[in-house]
Length: 407
Image (tube, rainbow, N blue to C red):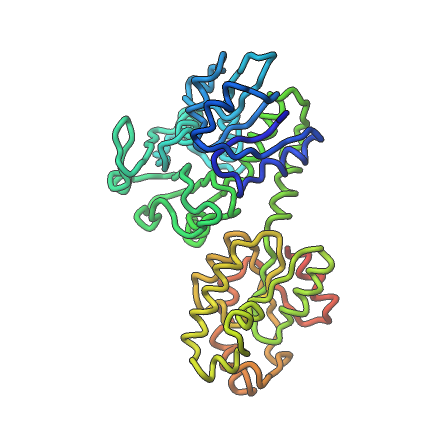
């Protein structure tokens, strides 16, 4: 192993992708069980490595030299093997600081809650101090050792929350470490989790109008600073270039809208032109239930169908880099949209009512009167659910181009 990342579970990691974008060196992902960690570090058969959960603190006892910043923080995420001498650094500090500054989040004189008790929470505490926070509290379930409990955290009139726990991380993307509804004065939420692109915590904060950012930029920035420690020369423009490329590649393009608004046709065309996987949620449902949607409606009713739809949306939400066409009623369940926004940009194909068609195989819009009723019931929900609205009143080619421009 020349260069790479070590951690216990790395199936979700983007690190190899980032380093491959930067340089052509051989960068590996190496999962190490806790009982294997001691032998790995004593052999030190590597040139330089990144270190992630749960080894950022444990690795320090194996090092011959630790940078002052890493000592101050009490956590290391980069180890360089200099002719047998192991030197530890913390580039997470610069990554998190860069994420906060890039998004114009002002910590000066603010009260900050840092969720978590691991090495990254220590890094976040150092960043808060560096950026002039008035107070910063690390939060854990049990508290103690300078940390407060989540119950105590709810009594803090916090301005900013920084999540450093793995809560909401792929593949368990549902849930958040804390309920932001308990805080009235939040100005920003930062989550170091980068997969999904927007955690449950971030999606819910954005829905409340709170500035909220996920951890992908932090990951890219710390990787670039790590590459410098590895001995490679990077350019200033690499930060934005690599971040934008990976974010765009990983983000889903999600189409919502009325039946016959063109979601499937446009979605398939976009899939071909962009070289992305195409997923139709209705097709996934049909495969799951083993019958047509109209048959299922007739036998089981709409309520049962919506339950199946919600299950399918939860599975689809884990996908990245796909084009997703959804059923017309997907927006009736707010949770569906929250899940789709974790990895996706939601685009409303707003096709005028007089251009929509009825169809016998669509039980809720099988005649003109039903179609009009559905349109009136759902139109504002579509608009409220979307990140981007496209007036889909043109030919397919033009509508596809509009979506590409909106994405």
